[in-house]
Length: 332
Image 1 (cartoon, rainbow, N blue to C red):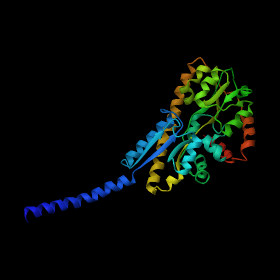
Image 2 (image 1 turned 90 degrees about the vertical axis):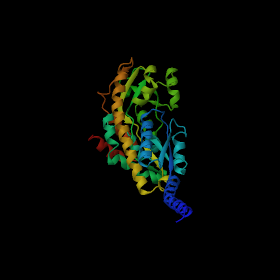
Image 3 (image 1 turned 90 degrees about the horizontal axis):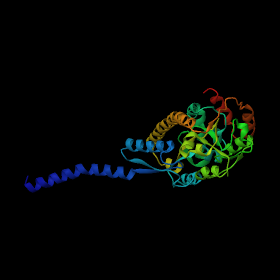
């Protein structure tokens, strides 16, 4: 074989070897997907940390073929806007509060019912039960989204600019609440005047007397330092606000079975870590709040049975799943 022939032979052989590698690389690039994930909480919040952790795990497990970009602080709009984007497929994923979902689907609002459980430790158990997860099964039909599980906040507390000791003391209180129908009906049972104010305006609204207080979870309240404009903190031990990682149904249907299974598994891991983080962190934040001048009250002497009966009279016909969740909660 001449030198020229040998050279041509080697070039042909190398090209033949490289071709499959180039095709594999091209195919991988063609199948690569970056998911856009929206969430309303600010950077550093536990929901955001969990979203980032999910994205990092997904990128690692797929060798970069699938990745996630997290848009925090409502950069893609508020939750109603993000739900609309999820429904059209303009947004791939959203971590959405149960309040938003419950305002659209009464049965999902069952997870927001008061006194299902009485502690954050029990919240962590409840959202992992089959009964709680089953609430998400209606979302594809009702909202065009796929629910991938529940994450949590801790039990909500009331910060007030005046002295309150029991839920009955909420009567006449102009109270900033999350504007979900469940919360509105619950606080109105005690004679409070639910006042929807945008979250960034609440601190000043309490300072100038526009509202007399707010209800919120401990993590958010400490980050916003509502203790500095409040006289009293009353743990209600009644409500909590979970969130559900959602994926657009239009996006989900185009994923293969293995990717769906992987996404479900990695979201579950991220939620487990987020839930455990809240349980641990809340205890430390409560101790920090106890060290501030705010009067830290207790609901230990309050019997909620009358409030439960009144609330259930309104909501059980709309969300009968509440009864089942109460039974489960009583065992936790």
